[in-house]
Image (cartoon, rainbow, N blue to C red; front, side, top):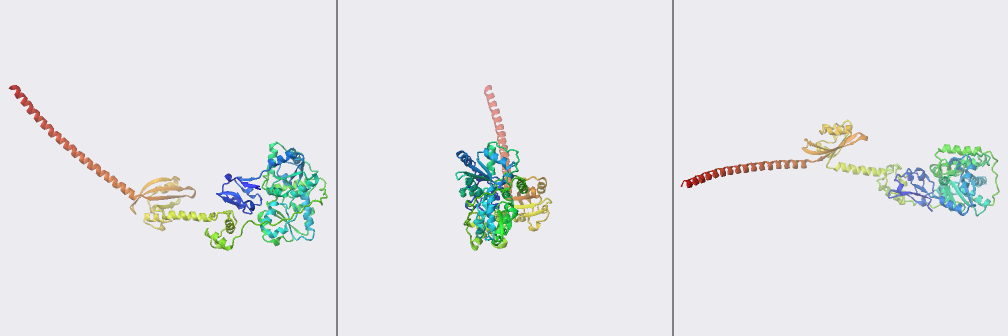
Length: 558
């Protein structure tokens, strides 16, 4: 069953989810994040940190509606006590009324189940057989321990969660044919409900809020403080389970609240830390009030205050405990095989060598790839969960190396100056073009090349596409382009050798001029010849005409 997935088209390849995933249950295929379901504990941390809102939680709204429609008088709703910090409501009575308008026949706080879970914890602690205990209310934390800290599994309290306990109580009181739906801020509860055989569906507060809005259901302003005082309503905040013990009595164990993955890893890194401790463990820092599907935008401290204030205002009688000795609240938690294969030291070294990490000091552990250390990344590569070459320092060095090689070996001369016109960098071709060496770096660039346009471009911020320049020191003609890097106050010029092209152009100009001169000479000579011929023809014609006239006249006389 898939309870959490990513919208691939919305994923922007930012790696925020991987960096915040405690089990690294995310791999990237074609630069898009995919959840590795067998590794995921459904803590929902990826949901909270995704800047693109690309995570999608399995929605059960339609299934719950269908359940209510099919069994109109047989669907109960168990409400997580953090409801008070997520909805703009003043009392559970007002909240209950709103939920019943959705069709739920019975609505009660999950704190009822939590009360009996606390009672079971107390029995274990005072049995004289317990030298350490981890609470099992948070399914994400339980799965995390079961999968990654096998030596600590024996400390998991063999007790069901408040949700399951409450489901059993509801079925005991109302009948086994009653269907139970849970609502809270947690994604992991969906999987727990699916596997419990007791809870039909687990809704998130976000889903319930959608259902309210679909039917335009609002809360009344009624404040009801006469409800039974049940300290288990403290469960969703830090130390909430501890506070649910009367007078905080967890003796003979020392109460130890642990919130968040970092603290969990810290205490479980040495299983002996659990000896003599009653560990209240939550995957979400601050407790359930900071679950991944909360509606509240308040700070953790604000929500903590809201819950504490709500519980303290209740002025009814003490919670009336019922006899549920015939309900089995026990559960035996088992080790879950860690899906990750463990590579040998030699295999880790081979993987690291692919990105030029050969020594311990080469492992900078920057975390940019999403893993906390280079070795952790190597293990992910070994398990086909990560791209071996996706390493920011490696890619940066590779890009710089390629860039430097291109700049170093290009036949074009390149020089970079700062706002003062001082050379900050230049390549070998520049040294060759200008008949200088690297000692020119740090000096005013116009001491080596007459190109005032370079400093002008830097001062105006305008790039220049093409300037024709003659370098008398090397007898070269160049085409120069200038690019300004405004944010760094730099400009660089690229000199492209155009000497051969320019000389060929000059030769062609000279050849054209010579051809024009020759053509002019030929034309002039031809015109002179024509004129001379014309002149001779003119004289000859005149003489012939005169002779013929004379002959004609002589004939007339005869």
